[in-house]
Amino acid sequence: MSSATPTPTRVRRLPVLGALRLGRPSDVWFKPALSVVAAVAPPSLLLVVLGRLDLAAYTMAGSLCALYAHNRPYAARAKVLAWVVLGMLGGLAVALLAASLTRNAVVLVTVGALLAAVQKVMCDATRVGPPAHVILTFVSSAALFVPQTLGQVPGHLALAAAAGAWAWLVGMAPAPLRPNGPERRATAQALDAAAAYAETARGGEEGAGARSAAYAAVHAAWQTLLAAGDRPSTARRALERLVVRAEVALAAAADADPARLRAWARAVRGTGRIPRTGDPRRDGDGPRRTVSGARLDGDGPRQDGGPLGERDELVGVAAERAVAPRPLWSRLGPLAPVAVRSALGCALAGYVSLALGADRPYWALVTAASLYQANITLTWSRAVQRVVGNLVGVLLFAAVTPVAQLGPLALVLCILACNFGAEALIGRNYWLGSVCVTPLALLVTELPGYQPTGELVTDRVVDTLVGALVGFVAAVAVTDRRAGRRVERALAAVDHARERAARLAADPAATPAALEAARRALAAAVVDLRATADAAAGEWWQRALPQERVVLAEQAAHRTLAATVRRQGLLPGPGTTSTYTHTEGASP
Image 1 (cartoon, one colour):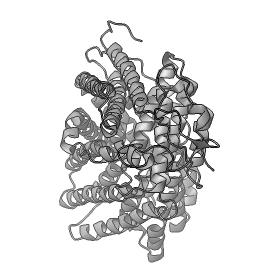
Image 2 (spheres, helix red, strand yellow):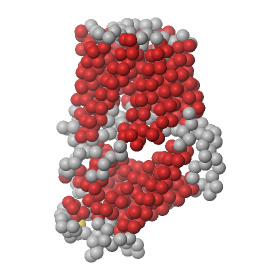
Image 3 (cartoon, one colour):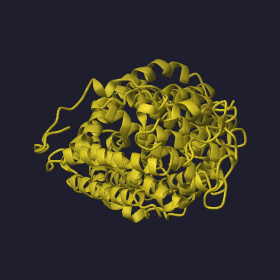
Image 4 (cartoon, helix red, strand yellow):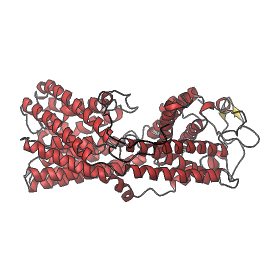
């Protein structure tokens, strides 16, 4: 716990080696890697056959949309991918029109910087997920410096739209084979996170960190299940019960069985039947009847006029689906500092690159655009990762250039290999993915025709250093001084949600739906408070953050969550023997 009188936030030590540390790959690293290859290959190979590889830059703009939304349920993925394709086409249209109307480099850089700011803010506000705005900015910025005429714009947009439609089909292709795949993965991650917390639930910083991560994973799992559509299914209900199990483990970590939670997670990740864990609720006469640790479907008393598995166990799910989402405009206000950082940093990076005589100032612009994260500390880490990855990447480009210049087919194959490598490695660390992204960007410049390797390498190194340095300076200059106020608002939201949940938990007449909705609202508020506090802690030159109040609010909220879970019957009352680890199991 921090001191009761925290000191004002000042300049912090910025990590270097820590920013380059490799992490574990994503559970689905192969999905975007394979998807982007499947999306890029057919249009590019068709252009090779037609002898028009110079148009591949436009088809690739649409194909890269296949990188998005791999963590979304298919019902939500269809909408997100469609919006990504439309957003890509909108940015590309503005860029092509600007390129056809003027060749003034300063004007084009300005347009590119404004586009980058809009793309950054919209991706953050809609939480579209990785690779977020970077791909959109790369596409629109590169198009600004490709000579165009107004007559060519419709055809180029049509190529991008056709490739974008193909990318949409590629993204949706796994749906018939594994319709609940994203929901399964999110549920498995929640179970694993709950198991990790159960293993470290002895207090201290390690336990607190694992607890925050577990609550975030459970919250993400609920959001994934809620985004899967309104039509219930047997598989969906089974997954929801498993997420309830993870919540129970968070509320009573000492009684939880980490091995069982991990076993459920492994089973959910597979393609077999989803484990049926039974209902953890207990009525007044004791635990439910079980057979070999697995609940008999439909067994147990009725509440609210229906079977527990249908009417009472998951009443909060329907209640949460009925809540209208937060309007987009309300999410744009807090992003104003990020928008200013992006516009200023990208514009200055492009102008400095032009002043140094660069032919492709959009490289510096895109480098600056890729830096901006939730706070200054994370932005610095991304700058270190970008510079290291690009410097190693230009060496890789120099090595593969002799192969790529063997012919159009060899060039396309090298581009496909770099696409796969970038998505396969970027989950370990951004710099490692950039090692493949850099030669990919350089190879794309050779689609209209081969260019001197030494000149490309030199320009890329200079523009990377310019973009990283100028972009970070702009981030430091535009400090997010509203971060402290957002922490105060998040604290107030947690206090309000906690009071409501505690009041309902103490009310014998509270309905199951109201109690469940209050518990979910409190859990979401706690997750938001931790994310807001972490983001604010990485900002510079701001007033002191109420770190102790944050810790105390989290602890009180977690106690209330446990009490609410106990009031719902998911846990035995105080002083009784828990049967959580003994009476519940998974069916094959």
